[in-house]
Length: 123
Image (cartoon, rainbow, N blue to C red; front, side, top):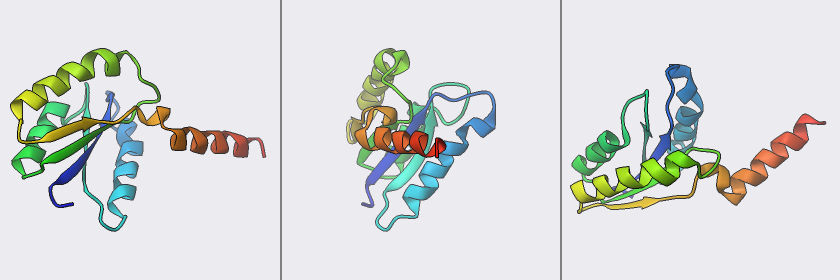
């Protein structure tokens, strides 16, 4: 997986602690055998931007980049802003296959894990 990367893409916030869960997701991923390169990127308020993260990965020789939105739902930012950012990144880096996953909160496994967590809170 030397030319494969994942970008965990979040909204961003003025409080740097907001990125803590995304950093922990990254650390968990990197602890797994055969992990791809994993980076964080943000829509606003935090660095790097998605464009900067993709440019850095492309410059490092990554040829497949999967964008994983760490959002609860397919909201307005993912419907309006992200397609524009991806079009620009794909035009700037035609040597890279840049794919987009569904928002993390829409994935069945994540929904099941959140439901189990909520159930455990009642125990």
